[in-house]
Amino acid sequence: DSQSDIAHSGPTIPLLRRQPLTMILRPSYSAAYRAIAARHVQQQQAAVATRFMSSNQPKKHLVTHEEGVHQTMKLPTAWRNKPLFRRQGDVRFKSGMEASKLLIAEAHRRDSHDAEYIDSIASTMECLSPLFDRNPRYAFVAKQLMEPERFIQFRVAWMDDLGVVRLNRGFRIQYSSSLGPYQGPLHLGPHVNAGLIKALGFDNVFSNGLTGYDVGSSVGGSDFNPFDKSEAEVQRFCQSYMTELAKYVGPDIDDPTMGMGVAEKEMGYLLGQYKRINSKFTSGNVPFMNKKSSEVPGKAAVLFAKEMLKDINQSLMGKRCLIIGSGKTARAIAAKLLEYGAIPLTFSDESGHVYEPSGIDGSKLRTISNIKLERGAMLGRYVISSTTAKFNEPSNIFDISCDLCFGCGPIKTINADAVTRLADNGCMGVIEAGHKNVTLDARQALKSRGVMYAPHIVTLTGVNIVHAHKHDLTDNTLEEEVHRIYNDVKSAATEFNARGDLFAGGSMVGFLRVADAMLAHGAI
Image (cartoon, rainbow, N blue to C red):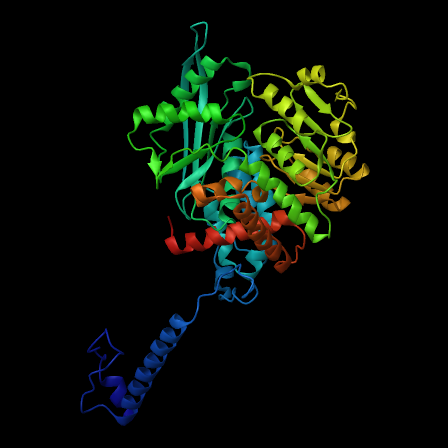
């Protein structure tokens, strides 16, 4: 009968593998077997046709306004059944929040000594938990992203003015090249250590990713303090630092940019030494380590504040603005605020803060800029040239009544107590224009008090805009790009039930773009 024919006929042999599967059917095979083989061929032909039709359809993007996030995350839930960790038995997760807690616990296990890095991991993974709920596969990508591609630490020996050999530690972390060549700032200061560099590199992944440009993430620096050194000592340090760093950076490989303690002079010394070592120092007719971006981060921060106010039908005109810091970014913020009719009130540095009750106009800003351009000069000198300025009055700068606060000072300047003082004095928004100025407790306080907050991963995208547009960047182009990035971040936050939370929206947009590239590259 037909059952015995099938059972004793032996294995079937594929004739061709490149075409739909065709079987060699011997004359002894029954009609039932032929029917089974014919059905198999029809199923394979239908599958090929389906794949062809789907390949011709327009690809969906996870963060576009047209498609939306809900319609593009329909992958099977099989990833939820896979173990996220397998070190001491299989560890699985049932929800996105549980996946986030597992990832944070793994960061604690491996890097418990790096407090800043743990803070970055914890705050970011909590924001990404809705993504893990909708697409469990992204939790596995996040696990891979928690480890940088390369971390470089080296000795920097240089000679001071007395002829004594001094030593510092140099760092460069090349965190992710999934989207393109590495790019990121250099930071100099006694607060710089391996944990901070790792945390800033992790944050920079999301900041660079959410811009939509083909650029990776890197951060570097040293625990060298440039503010209490002579110009000759700074030059000798920069030359020694670049002598080692030049082995790992270069055009289309890794492009260092300005950061904390690194301005035009320091960048000039670093580039000069790089040119002595390497013959190639341009990319697309654009000089390596371009210095034209010094004012753009400050301008971009003001434009993001403008977008935030536009959402509540307000403008910058007449807004009294507290500026924390007095570096290049802080002064660029003050200049841009004056263009929009806002009123800068303060600047601050290690010596304290200066406060102009009636505002800092263009003339006063030029005076402050001339003071701060001199290495090691303190703001206290400004009160000699102004009869209206107050120095360290009130004693706490956050007791000054203001509408907006721009944080450009040292790391963790704005804490929960500062947020309480700002909110009590009528502040409606905090714009983080420096790296990690706002602490985790301060973020929670801002949310509970209903104060608008623009995080640094969103506001510090100005350098990437300069890199992408090169010589063609104008004020109008910068404003258009800020508007585009802000809308992407705001839409993602709304899509994931975090309306108004720009930190969550920026983290999601940046992660999605980087994660999709990592998935395409495989396990690397």
